[in-house]
Length: 167
Image 1: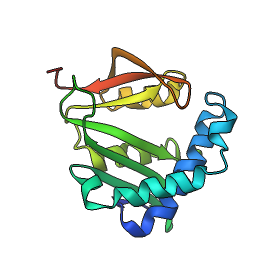
Image 2 (image 1 turned 120 degrees about the horizontal axis):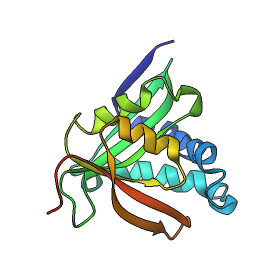
Image 3 (image 1 turned 45 degrees about the horizontal axis):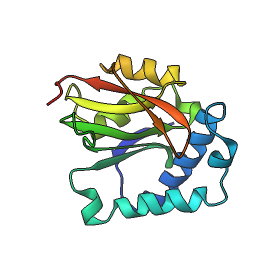
Image 4 (image 1 turned 90 degrees about the vertical axis):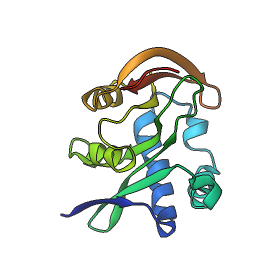
């Protein structure tokens, strides 16, 4: 088996959308409402999201990567300039991988592919996802006390940061 992490390309859109949808269903089945995870338009929305990423205006300052195992996309990541007014540096917006590759190092490689190791960064993670929080702690992130409720999903999220400071 050969695992490759590389920059995402427009030809990867369908595979990226599939990982995004499937990973949400694997990861959030006990956290998110079923109607969100299994919405009839979930596949179309994620495909459109990733397709729109590859427009020039959407890509400004953003970077996406995929992990392939024997030619099949098994993980995705995307980062860009921080969207929170009180943060500088990069923000990790997406990092998902199929459960069967958890613990293989794919997550760290996907993170490093979109945010240079050790660079100041922030991310939001589900408060009810201790596995993800433990992974991010290993990557140098720590909760900074900021919390929000994601309205469309009804999920409480905490912000984790690495290096740097607020404005």
